[in-house]
Image (cartoon, rainbow, N blue to C red):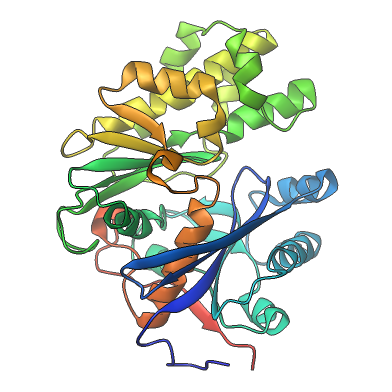
Length: 368
């Protein structure tokens, strides 16, 4: 068993764990890296939340440290440990379950106990990735950009491009792969574009008792209400310069804006809102990207992908077109970031979270 200070050189096989704000379940993915170059990707897995577990976690959204979260914590710990079944990593990156995110207020809260997971999984665990960044004045999100930079190198990209993650919240990473390192000036720009799948999922749950709009089937039958879309785009968030980040429920106003619409029109309008938020964000890119590579659940929504392709002046493709796994990219990111934390390398910078200095966030817990 490797102990403190033993991840300084060579390649490390790490497993990353990610449970996003869509509350679908826990992704787990392995990769081998030295913390800078990706050597290879390993196996992956998924442990879905049951309806009962998802209900408990949804009730916990918005809660902070010190609140009564015993039931939610037990679900998070059990699901993450079960997700690791069959994996034998040297190091684990444990993101935890985001319940609240107020970088300019109370901070950020990812539910999870890295000490307990290290003991149960019998491997070192890197966790609480975001707090250090927030404490130093950063947004604490998004954190995948340093990994996206490594992916751009892995696919041998030569021109500026963007990774777009359409999870519960949307976020974009603009990359200049001609730079040597992610922390170099001009290598990255990253920020949350706006809501993505979370409000659409909430609409489907409220109106149809379904967890999401599968294949965009409901949105495809509806008509976008342009008045509601214009009111949405008038929100002050879109006028803010990046870096910037969001909490899952910061745009709960979306549900109010479509309250009087039919189910299909509401789904179409909310899908258009999520796509329009991305289009607004693209205006901040230093150089228009040569292509946009999409990961997260939103890439499975043909309606949203069509809207993006119609609006953007570049190729919009799922990351699978370049040999990456769009379902596992976030989990792989936290495997990669865990190695960087163990190596003492930065995981965020001014261009990704607005933090004033290079930050290597995360605590390391050992099983003994």
